[in-house]
Each structure stands twice: as structure tokens, then as C-alpha cells.
Image (cartoon, rainbow, N blue to C red; front, side):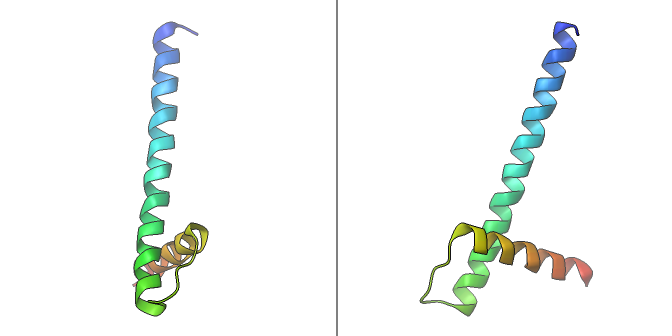
Length: 63
């Protein structure tokens, strides 16, 4: 593998990793909105907020 191909592979890996983190943070943000609307006095952890955010975007994509 040449140096150029290795650099391209590392760059594309880092781009995909960054994009995945961006999507995860987006899910957490949307889930936080649902948390504030449905349970304003309670705060759930980031895993639950992420699941709620995923569900919200899934439901909105179906319409």
C-alpha cells in the first residue's frame, strides 16, 4: 500500500467516524427536546435521549 493510499484510507476512516459522532449527537439533541417536552422535571441519560431522538427522526421520516 502506498503512502497516498494509506493517507486516503485514514482520512476516509476519520471522516466516517466524525460523521457517526455527529449523527449520535444529533440524536441526543432531539431526544433532549423530547425529554424537556414530556418530562420537564426529570432528566434521562444520554442513551435514552439518543433512543428517543432516533425514534423521533424515524417517525418524521415516515411522514
